Length: 294
Image 1 (cartoon, rainbow, N blue to C red):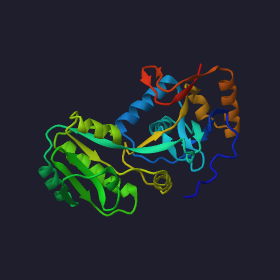
Image 2: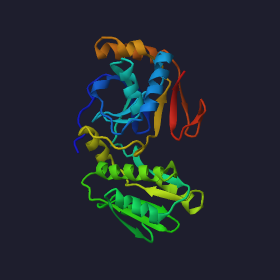
Image 3: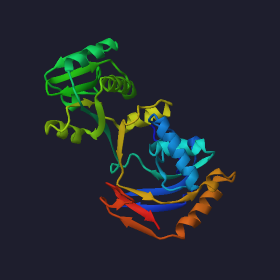
Image 4: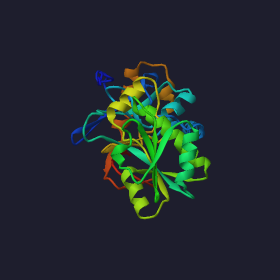
């Protein structure tokens, strides 16, 4: 996978060094960015209204500096586009830095779960499927095992040959819709947390999804394709918060270098404070270190 040059030659407004990772803050053209997951229409419209009412964008999106693939904040990108912004503040990072990791989201299931009924429903969808006594996480995502529904009675493995992970996740999306149609309540947890809750009896079942890798994220996004919502879970050691960039600066028809120079002045005039991982910021607990502009 080619890493590309991205914005490597563009002066940034602000640089934060966090160990071996650089957080490069810059305003970028929305049209240059690539999304990798589907958006949720209702949430997108509400977010666009909130940002318009605030008159500013509080937090930057996280973007791979080489490919310009958005790793976190995809709804913000489209929300700004909806309200007429040409640009967006981004925190540019080197996605290939080993400190940045990517995982997947399992779906936890609550409610009456009959593997026999799930098997029949999946077969009606045109997929091949088989009931087994058990399946390990590493076996899901290896063609043709696109997904698996695990319960106390075993597991149903949904099989459809695939050439790329987004093809496998299209199967995951359809199976999730089938389960919701059966009245099951669906939650989202990390692979580890979902399986722990299942073993502890806190959930009735788990929809196991393929593990995701960085190459797949980049290749799918650059090809103009999208994973379903809640496919990837990116863990980044640190992120900046509360840039509070006025929307007027993101709509103005000025050279990008001039806009970044104005943003640099705004940020350098403020105090930067680091809050360690686990800190509660405006009601949200962050798993990573955060840098707060005050």
